[in-house]
Image (cartoon, rainbow, N blue to C red; front, side, top):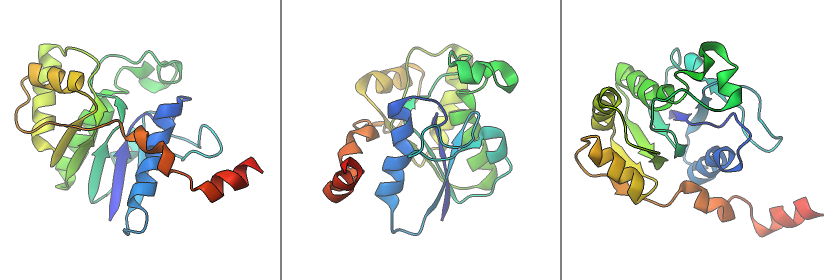
Length: 186
């Protein structure tokens, strides 16, 4: 199964760069091919990270499932990340493309989309809340990264079960075996 994984995996942020590695390790051996999708895309930010494709390229990609998360992605504010501000569009839609764009693409392909513990960093304006309610309604599974995010989803009028799970980066301890860490240290 080819799965598109949406998040900010193309910026120099330790936590954001862990999410694809954790997901790849978690899904290893299950026959899934992951395509990591970020606002700018490109080669790995650091040598041991993953390459990503830009959200615009994902709009032309066929896949059988989509995952949104992790990080504080669920908002529609222009990005304050310099790398996104300096790209085409000035970062205006960088974050909205990660959840709304992902959901639109999944809906067009008629494939499931899950929200893997993204965060909602604040109260959403009414227009964004209406889009969010639609997107959440499309999710086959919805988990927020904390109680605060669940509260903002509920405040936006999202209904149904909203799971709260630990930030997936908590699994960093499972990324490398003791033997792999010893080899890297040596």
